[in-house]
Length: 396
Ligand SMILES: Cc1cc2nc3c(=O)[nH]c(=O)nc-3n(C[C@H](O)[C@H](O)[C@H](O)COP(=O)(O)O)c2cc1C
Image 1: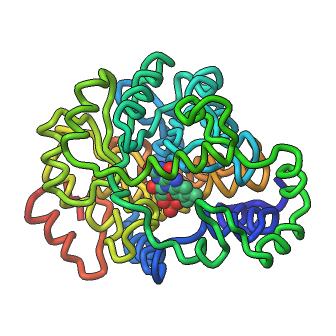
Image 2: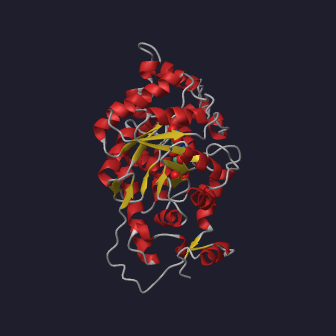
Image 3: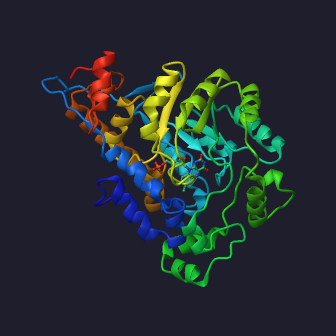
């Protein structure tokens, strides 16, 4: 992709191709969108201290996770309604992940089905489940994930109800699909997107079609899905899904050490420290800022992962130094697939891979397993002091 050097270049291309209503849906946060800044600033204010005079000529960023080796410590987070950005986007993201040997998490609000996903990338795909109001639907989905041969189930816990996304309200995005005239008119200015829409019509939620009643139209299925979201979600759901699901079980959206400890006590294998990309609670802290306390609370007893605000390879290293075993990103690959299909998603992953490689050499590390707090420095140096005091490998 010509002229694309970093993730932000992909964002600009996506912005050009997509109507405002779609771009805003990807890009936006909630309320005053403080959370987007919070996530970004957490990385900006974290310094990483280089060690020199280390032979970094051979660098290896491969990382083990849940008993298998991935080529990089970064995967693709679940993002719903992806067909709105490009038809077939879920499977394109899965294909890009498979070819790059990193994990892809299909969203519980995906456009494509679990069964089609398993045909494209059976060894690289995880599935993210939401709890539906009708419990039998979520339980059936979990069975389908298992029947399809996927090994990892992610339960997203940070959507107690739909959040206040004001960009979407202004654009007329919602269950009623009452797009404003301005929104429709603006969409006409994005012809490649418009042609796809005219060819394929309203996107489907393929996983949900069978539950919405015989011959339900795409619009009927969408209304059904929206009615099924917003079910009360409690630890009982965690217990139930743990009982049903025999593979790796991950909770996504954990932000408090006590919740992490409770998850562990219920047999959860991993958590994703996440504020849903600043799309739920606007004044939630950055996942990066709560990561050390969570990691301290659970230690190595469970797999701690993180997402939110990762735009650079160096951000990946910072999160790993702070205690994450693996990270995910959502928007960059979504920009990529929106702008350029499979090639765009592959480009996003290749950019991360290249930047991780350069950054490892820059800090004097040749292996992902070496990364830890000894490379970190806070502006107030509190952490540095902590490292020295605890003797946790601090070399400074
Ligand atoms: C357009 C969009 C749709 C999303 N849909 C889902 C979803 O269906 N399920 C979910 O658990 N998280 C969803 N997320 C959150 C992502 O999984 C992830 O937590 C977030 O994007 C990470 O932040 P980042 O975009 O800054 O990398 C979505 C995010 C975006 C941008």
